[in-house]
Length: 437
Ligand SMILES: [Zn+2]
Image (cartoon, rainbow, N blue to C red; front, side, top):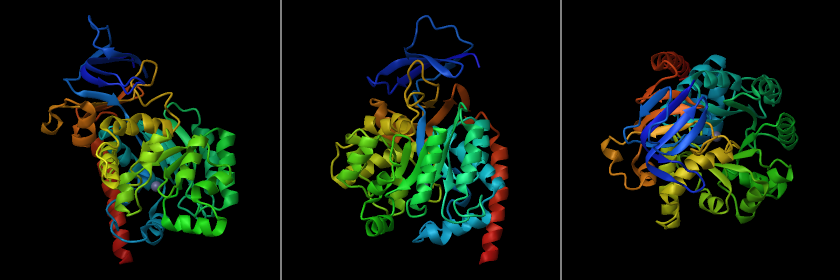
C-alpha cells in the first residue's frame, strides 16, 4: 500500500483534546495513521500526495446497528403496524438465501461507504456471505449471526444460529476487518437457556454479542409480567450484560437500568431515525451519554430506518433530543459528531483501533468536500457536519488505509455491477409479491 499524504484539509481529529487543525494533514503508512496534525513544511515524502481542497477530514463514521441485507426489502410495508411479525419475518423466511444476502449486503455496503460509514455492526442471516463481501469491498464490520426461536432462512430448526455461529466465528476470528459475533435477536424471541448459550459461545470465542434490547413496549410488558424485571435487569440477571455486549435501541430503560449498563460497560447503539419512524419512543440517550456509557449511533435495518448513513442519524439525534427535552443546548454538535464516530467505535469495542484520527490508529477516514453550497460557511466544522452536511458531500473514504471512495465514486468495487445484480433481486421479489397478491 505504501504511504499517502492527505493535505490541505480542515482536520477534525476527535482526539482526547478534540484538536482541530485548519491547515491539517494526515500521513497514512500501509493501514495505519503515521501522522496527524498541521501540514508539515516541507511536505513529507510519500508515495502519493492527495490535495483535500480545503475539505473536512474526519474519522470514519460507525453504524453501530443495522441489518444490511434487509436493503432488499426497503420501502415495503413502511407504514404498517406490527411489521416485524406480519411482514418482515414471513418475507425473510420465504426469500432470504445466500444469493440475496450476498447481493444485498454488497449494495448496502456500497451505500454505507459512499455515505462515509467505515465500520458497521450487523445482525442478520448467512453472515459469512456478508463477511466475504465486506472483506472484498473493504469495510470494517462486526457481523452478528442471528439466533432466534424459530426456523430461520439459514436454519431448518429453531436456534440453528448457534451452530451456524460455531462454524462462522472460527472462520473469521482474527481477520483485520471482520469481527464475527453472536446475535441473539431479542429477549422476547430467545429464551433464557439459549440466551445463556449465546453468551457462553461469545465468551468461548472472545467475540462480541449483540442484541435488540428494551426496544418494544410489549417486550417490557412481557418481561415485567414473566420475570418481574425490566429487560435490562433481566439480561443482567442472566449475566449477559457485560463489556462485550452491544445493545441496540435501549429505549425503555429507567435510571437503575442506565446505572447497570454503565457499571457493566455495555455498548449501546442509539437508533433515532428507526425509533422515530417506528413510533417506538425516545431513548434516554442524553442520560446515557452524560453517564459516560459507550453510546454510538445506528440506522437499524433499511426496512426500519431506510437510510444507512450516519450523518442523517447525527442530525436526527440532535434535533430529536433538543425538541424532546425543550433544551437547545443539549447535545452540542461536537458531541453529536463524537457519537457518530468515536462513540460508535467504543460501543463496538473497536476504539483502540478506530474512532479518531491519531498516530497509531488504523486509517479509517472520511473527506467531506466543502465546495457545495450547503457546506459553506464552515466557521464551526462540527456544526457543518451535524446540521448541514448530507451523504452527498462525502468525497473520499479510506478504510484500513485503502481508498474505498474517491471523488464521490466507489473506488474499491464496480457500482454498475452491484446495481445490476441488485436489480435482478428486486425483480424476483416483485414477482414473488405479485404471486402472493
Ligand atoms: Zn435491528
